[in-house]
Length: 464
Image (cartoon, rainbow, N blue to C red; front, side, top):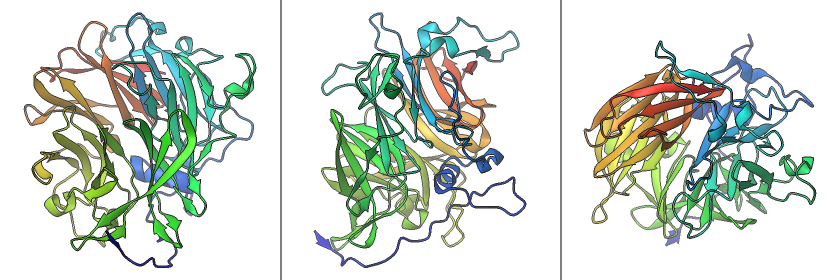
């Protein structure tokens, strides 16, 4: 593959529109908070706060939860919900990762008026081992079990990208107990085992740096880390996927992202942000809307643009998830907010691409959604196409799309800043969605009694 000559250029100016709303003369936010504001689509007056020296975050509570992972091992072992708290407001001097033993939550029923039950999580989090401290601005986490493990095996490690610096934190996991990866010897009450701030994994090799780590994903036997802003390589802009070995995460490989043009000449590609994996293929979006490559596929060491801009004029993609059979790709898209670009067609929504092996990916459908569609989750159903849950962050709504019917079948409204979603089993049958309420500082529980008839999505509880 040919390569274009490297140009000695400084990183390009980035357009990050969020500023402190509380100031009469707005001051630009620190970069990590500006990036989170861009990604989440939320403007919070608390973002002007400065970190409080010496004020530790709660060990059994939430502080702007940003990402979730769920373990349901069965066999008598408890189900555990893992919650990364970003401390977006900088009220505290750290973020946290929490492990919530769902078997220890109080039994509940929705209140008689139809509203969600209010559940205190403190009894479900071990005050000694159910938390670890993190640097501020955690990103999307990935839970690793082991290579070749049976399905539903509990995780043995969780990887947390830190958006303010080129760093990742690795956490050892034993059910509802957490430890820093390089914990010093000592008893279980050793403070060093729970404070993972001081020795994170660096995503850099010499000049090359994966700036603003954004998300982690399990891809085969490795962990992929995306990053949201350009770094430098040989004096020119570059973007990478950082690959980690789960058993030896300090062994970091930076893979340079390049796209070939029609003549086979390779050009440096835009950074990756949101990610979704199916088998050995990794699907990635980008925060650089000027690149006009909103979603791409990385497989067998080659990066490919999937043509979403050319087919639908969608310049900005936020979330990406392959269907559970790998035949379709769901991508949340937004109309471009940058006046220098041609207008995109359609409102906020979800683009659906066909991934047939014998043909280039084709835009199959566009589904309008409430404002601010961001993260999404494909949910398998036996003998039917997937359900897709979509967090519509700006409109405080979770939408449920039925790919069998080809339409949105249910909306759960009134969820403050929904972002990350995971799905598990409902105790009495059906599906339970766990939704990180970023600006509501809690976790929302949504129930589907019958996934095959998904019109009734019930908001049953809030974890606070």
